[in-house]
Length: 265
Image (tube, rainbow, N blue to C red; front, side, top):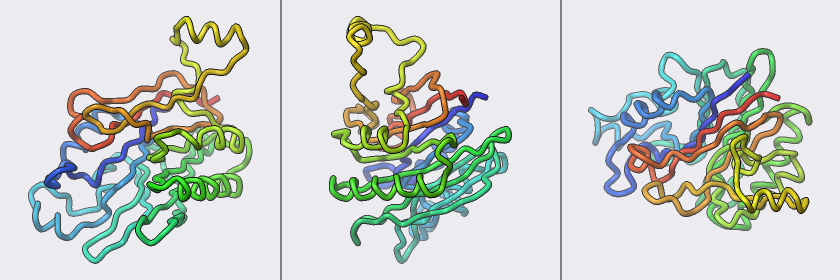
């Protein structure tokens, strides 16, 4: 079974400067991307001010419901709540979503963060999906990663296929080996690709050395430099993985999306 998975921080469906709405264009681009399961961060569940200010270009429903439309299923984890609305993480799935749980992992009062856990049955197999958006400070990210590992170990069987995806804000890549060792996952850009080539990679294999962990660069979208967004998997074989940074993707959000093709092992 092949699955097309994507993760994307959509910046609440507005531009970084001036806050102009981009949610309509986002829907069109994501429809062309056509992922089976889409992991989203900074999804605006409600924003009364933008709904009034941009009435012609702002959906009446939550962004997760708008992006799912009539063809997909949606789950939303509300994290940040304010007078005129709220935002959080979301999962959009071509398949039905069997269960939804949102866990608050906020490390302090100024950053509201959560882990959205959804179980998605795919051809009789339960795929456990965790949508993540970690904090801006290293200490908080470590504590949130501990909470993530605890959540995975208590909410999914040890042999269950799983996908953990989102904005980890981990630009120095301090968390990957911890997740590898404790959850048995791999990041999609770390797992050898079928078409992988290179002298250094060949020398590493001959020397019995593992390849360095190098997640993709996804931020800022116009010229990706920082490695913020990740897709970790277990129970899958990675066929392809890429960052979408050309054409409209450079303008739709401050992050570039990652898309990967997976085979259920």
